[in-house]
Length: 206
Image 1 (tube, one colour):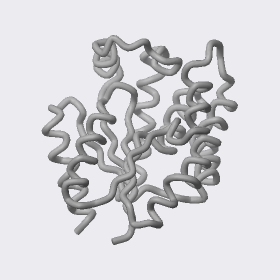
Image 2 (cartoon, rainbow, N blue to C red; image 1 turned 90 degrees about the vertical axis):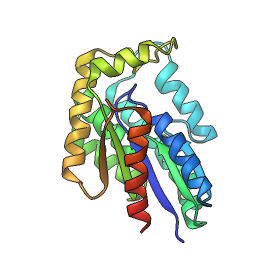
Image 3 (tube, rainbow, N blue to C red; image 1 turned 135 degrees about the vertical axis):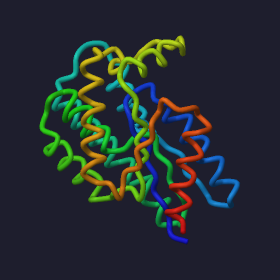
């Protein structure tokens, strides 16, 4: 079987990593080889860029931020994602370019189209087979993040309005590409969400 590319999207605090980990476990048990990755930071270079983007003190200009994410993604796709797919492996990524379109395009009030165009150029047109969007209002997502006890990064410290704009942008993207996106209500239990995600993936696998 050829490789399969699945991404998880949504604002911070909706449970992307948890659901991606559960799906990885499920598909591994079915006998598939899984490459689990994330953005930014899925490669050694990407980790350095992640430090600049999320943990550097001080502001990063919105356009510079968008370009740094695009640089991370270009390297990530060229050195990790495409080789895995070519080898017939399944790639599960916590975030992909839809995050840039939503966060920088809407949250930072840049042009969503321009950010998407830059991102598509960076990845040489590579689209996921499936994008799982975990949807939750910004206040509930922040309340979940606050329970982790972890120090928030530069993006996580943004105001509620930033995350609401980002959430709405994600929903716009999903509406524009219903065949690629699968929207899951993140107010549900972890198990309930995973059941729905596995059903959608099984449908994709045929």
